[in-house]
Image 1: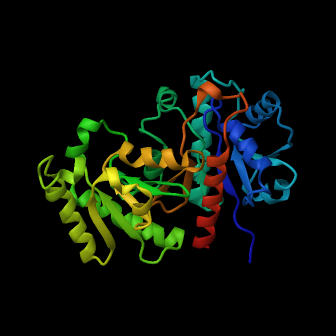
Image 2: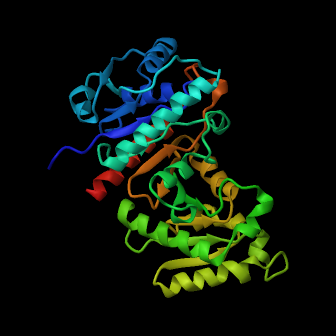
Length: 333
């Protein structure tokens, strides 16, 4: 069998915890049996971060992803790219420019097949916007780069205890009911089911669909979206032969016993999906973009500017994102 294609890890905002998490992940590579990976740009940022955090490791500059394997055992490979200085806790437009360049570089390499996957470090959406970045987040950027529309991809948050998919993401809560449609639910559920089968090795994955309102509407007492929008979507998915249940009251859907009955829960809005995963698996939660022609994962947390450079950031989610990306790449062959 040929060696797997190395994974591309983007730097994230150099003022956040991304650089130190990249360093910590490499230092724990053997413990977690991580597939070889390289960082996209920011060699000086990483060198300064290592010195600041007291981390002892070698950093090797590479000019092509194919050089990763030869360096990985002895040093963290860093692909030449945009660089700057490490400034923990001091976000700036210059730092966001580095983060954006790293994201764009990693995405291109994953699209070209020169990276087995792209694992994106945490960025500041506000700082990115100052560079002219017009997307609400990295997920939307990746979808656009792949030529996908916003309804052609799905964001799944996956941890050891739970997988959830928000059907609406970066929108105000007041806008959610108007954004929900039967077609949206059907489209996203199909994407999720196909990805769970292809990338996670699940045969006929089981999907649970949450209600929007308290008690899933209580037969129309607290809203009619369940009967008017969600139930018809479930009927259409069942007609497709998918294993789907719901609409379920969200307050009971994430209880331990309930979690054994499905492989992923489709939720109506951002916090309905992310709160339970972060409560259960905060340090191991992975953000996976489903429906792309290439693999993208990310640690499910932000830049954490307040603790950057203090040596207390947990690398668990970054390690989990690298490990999951490698496992997905292996299944795709």
